[in-house]
Image 1 (cartoon, rainbow, N blue to C red):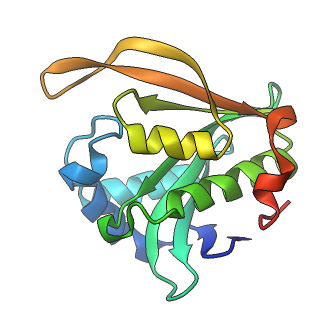
Image 2 (image 1 turned 135 degrees about the horizontal axis):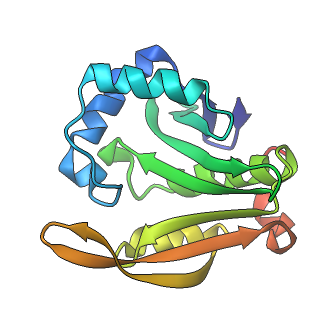
Length: 182
């Protein structure tokens, strides 16, 4: 479990799965995620069981400290211990909690964990080029744009660009993370 000023990141529990089904079937929530077919509870159980056994993935529930409410998830995927890198993923599924800084706090907690506990050197992500709110959030967390993947994803009848962003452990600014776990 990781703890920040307003959030706790904890293991995903079976009781969390109905919320994931709801979020992954909401077009607004999944707009900037990989294109996914409609999810049902059996699909979510299958994902839950497989991710728990995958040593290259760390998926954590994002929970509000104030009321212990599960609002999303954050992950490190494709963890490569030899090259000391991983891909960050995040979703705040509760739309009422968007634009409140919870994504930024969850990312900072996960990045600190990746660098100081998992001893990663690089954490990267791929984001839709038109998702300006997410890009600003990643920049606040220290991520830098590394490149553009032109027409990399097909959504809603058209190809869209995506950006590759990353942060290196030496770039990681200590003053940004005084409230976070090391």
